Structures are given as structure tokens and as C-alpha cells.
Image (cartoon, rainbow, N blue to C red; front, side, top):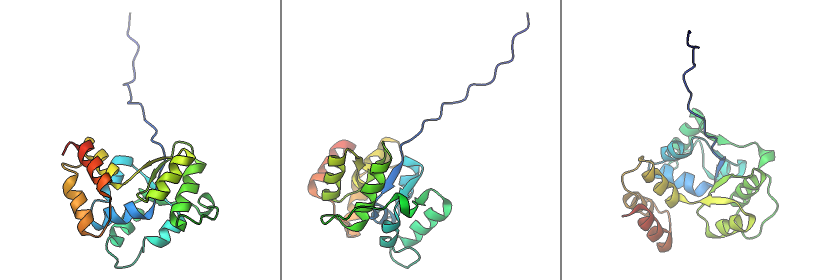
Length: 176
């Protein structure tokens, strides 16, 4: 009896949740030449039109060239303006509010944001969030980064503030 020809098994594709980033993590990681970690960890990352205005694209600002290159390569994606319209928010800046609005429209979206008040609002709305330190820890866990603390020191030297609580949590999570 002849055997039936079998197709090779294909790996199941895992659909990752959409990721939307506020300006802070994008600028910070671009300044310390670690923006590519977002691509490696998440694949594609979206940002709102309001955040686009905060990124200083097309300028000589530190990190702007890396952001421009990521957009050109297609993994860093500007969301359509209608997807990011946010109600007025007197506590958060317009970029944070637009990210929260866009994240709330798609269940399962992961929001990349470091601003404490924005993260508190995300939690209130049931939106999953992660900060820059969390991205670094995830990159280490996935083998894309050897150590988290040196990159946190680079961020600090570049003028990016992360609280002692965040740094200590990252140190503990990374086992450093």
C-alpha cells in the first residue's frame, strides 16, 4: 500500500497583540541606539499622529535619524489620525492621551509608556502597559540584550529619567 504524500508541518503563527508607543520610550531608546530592540521584541510598533509631532522626525535631534530609519523600514508605523483622536485630558499631555485613546480601541493592545500618570490611567482603563525598563528586561529574557543595568545607565546619562523604584524593579527582574 502506498503512503500518502504528507506536507511538512508549518510552525503555527502566533499573533502578537498590537503595540502602541508613546514618545518617551521611542526617543529614549533611539538616543541610546537601542531602538531596534523594539523591533526584535515586538515586531511592529505603532505611534499616533500626535506622538509623531513630539518625535522631531526629519531633524538633527538625537535619535531622530534612527526613528526616521525605523519608519522607512516599515516596522515603526504611524497610525491613521482617526484611530488616535483622544478626548480632552487635563492631566496628561496630548501624546499620552492619544496613545491611551488608540490603545483603548483595540483590545489586547500593549501600550509602551513611562509617564506615571499615563500608566495609572492605562491601568484604570484596563490597558496593558510596559515601560522602557520593561522592554529592556524582555529583550534580555529573549536573548537580545546581555545586561539591563548598563542600558539604564546610558538612558540616565542621556537625560532620560526613570525612578529608583523602576530601576530597582528592573534590576530585580533582570537578576542583576
